[in-house]
Amino acid sequence: MRILLAEDDPDLSRQLKASLSDAGYVVDHAPDGEEAHFLGDTEPYDCVILDLGLPKIDGVSVLEKWRRDGKTTPVLILTARGAWSDKVSGFDAGADDYLTKPFHTEELLARLRALVRRAAGHAQPMLVCGGVRLDPRAARASVNGEPLRLTSLEYRLLHYLMMHQSRVISRTELVEHLYDQDFDRDSNTIEVFMGRLRKKIGTDRIETVRGLGYRLKPLHDEISDL
Amino acid sequence: MRILLAEDDPDLSRQLKASLSDAGYVVDHAPDGEEAHFLGDTEPYDCVILDLGLPKIDGVSVLEKWRRDGKTTPVLILTARGAWSDKVSGFDAGADDYLTKPFHTEELLARLRALVRRAAGHAQPMLVCGGVRLDPRAARASVNGEPLRLTSLEYRLLHYLMMHQSRVISRTELVEHLYDQDFDRDSNTIEVFMGRLRKKIGTDRIETVRGLGYRLKPLHDEISDL
DNA sequence: TACAGACCTGAACCTTATCTGAACAGGTAT
DNA sequence: ATACCTGTTCAGATAAGGTTCAGGTCTGTA
Image (cartoon, rainbow over all chains, first blue to last red; front, side):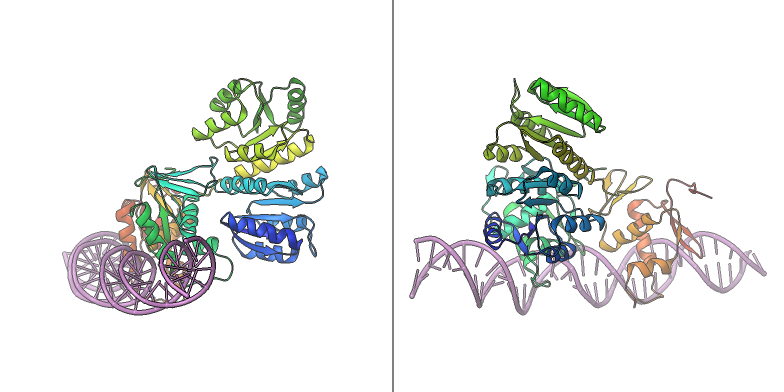
């Protein structure tokens, strides 16, 4: 999961970036509204954490621009100002959630989980696919009840696949969501990890669609919606 | 928009119901967890406002039940308890948003709008033609519910046909859209792939118009508009 | 009916996406 | 410092999928 953190306070930024990385997110940081708008426009984030009081361009304007351009990435707004009228205008600009400083990191993480989960079309916190289960909260996975030992990247790969199961996902989409901006585009790590993941969850679970990408099969081969 | 309001405090319930109705929502009210669970199970709400401190069955349990049953209705949790650990467990039970009492009605309405908007944003454009369906997001297709195994080029061909169904499409138009600039003009790959595609989706679906090109027939033989 | 041009099709060929094992490098724990 | 765990790179192997080719079939015209 790749996140854009738009926050100008250096201390808070550093602390949040650390917490988010620990939680398994790939984080890009934008210290002002201009940078935030540019990054959000060009990179495919799974979620954006947006401070309202940004230099250069303020948060609400950035958000409004994105929404006008049809961006649907979930946005969680962060603000020092507690005035509820701010919240209302934030929401109506297209925010999906709102958090007032100061806050507990735990709460931010919980809200993020809910946001990302909902954006992928899942209501339930536990991801299930055939015999494979993945608990994003505990960052653990199992196959047929048997717990899996996954490395960080294997886990993130599986997580992304399960969030979008039964959809074909291109290698570039995976790269864009598992790594931050500068990553060697024509590396074959994804293939290698696909191999390793397959070895662990069963080789027939992940179908490769030649020329398009990979697909996590829900059961055997039924199509989700007719 | 139809909303379920699960709240036991009579005063707050009355006041909220009024505000929500004013805002144009149709509101059903459940005064306890049992009623809430039953209603949420049977009626198709667009959103649920769920108090955590309900009599009979508490809110988190109700929510967990729904989620276990696969209900995906967006749920906004309401609570008097301000403890952030409550929020975390609420989110992880599958809540989509959270509001702590006391709150401004305006903020509740803003959050509702955000929630409903987000939930509705998932209508994916599915291309349909007779019994053939194609989901561009998932890069998958089916005929009469039966999933199709298409290769990359077959898929792209079908996709283009379905985007322009019931129109006659020339071979050169297809070539121009499926290949990059320099492609051997007098190759017969298109014909070959037409053959393969016909074999997979049924031979009578694609009509060849001699001298002009091909046409994907919507149903059996009618033409949509003259 | 005969002919020409357009289209179809099966099979062979060949390009290249993907797989895989092994080696390497950087970081972390012992 | 040493051993280990993870992520990355590389190169050879494999086979899926795209293209070509050589007839064969159909359709319209005269």
